[in-house]
Image 1 (tube, rainbow, N blue to C red):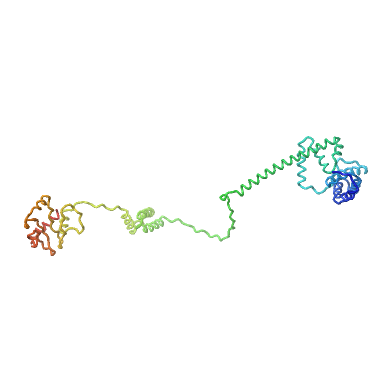
Image 2: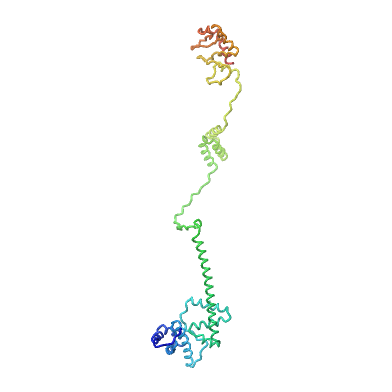
Length: 387
């Protein structure tokens, strides 16, 4: 905003134009376009012109642009008075390079300006306006209406701003996507997939000790070892014992003739052999006669349905056979009344404790029986054993 100078603002105007910041800005701008010896003269001329003007901008940014435009005119006047022709482009004196961000932004603006028809010319107008030159002066130099120059500059600014925001948004989207992928890959990784790197322990130098050479046992040594193992297992594991003895025999046939080995083999084979079944072959006549002379075996005989044989006496010979049980007819007849002498007609021949035979009839129960001869008694014993 521009306002006319009044007496109340005269002092503020002088202080602002005489500040070291404004003087340093004008010196840097003019030093690039005139010799070093004429810089102070041109700066002083610009400040005098500003103090004499009645339309000085009140804002600092507008004031800088306005002073830059005044300086451009005073530089042109300085070259005319010196009798020199103004060059098409004044050589720039080497200064400190602009920051990298500004350089990149300038390259980007030049690249975008080439896409439009009059982009280069409009970009130059924007640069001159940024240095403080007025668009009216630019329009007069280009011989174009001032409104056309302002419209083209305004349109270029708006187009540059839209393109810049679009590219910034695209870059931000790409950066956000990369951050999400990185977070998912690093922080959301399953614990099973996370492999902790174990610290690498440097190897400790040690003296190299040659490893002992392991020699394979010979067949004879292997056979001896197998026989030792077999002799330990023959009692509990006969099958394993025989297998190891067979393997040792295959490796060392001569060692299988050892008596200990043969005894161990026979013992294991006997344990593996099935038990023999009892035979039912009849005894010959001599064995029968010997068994009858010796008497029955002390073992118990299986029960039979026939009448049991009396136990043997103390002499070792069997007792006579007990009388048979009465039949049904005899039982019925026994129920009839009979005399005491004829109630039981059977007799029992036995022996007393001292071996003396006696009769078992009711009339002779208490009288001992004397055998007629030894042969008759043996015949009776054999008949009882056969029955």
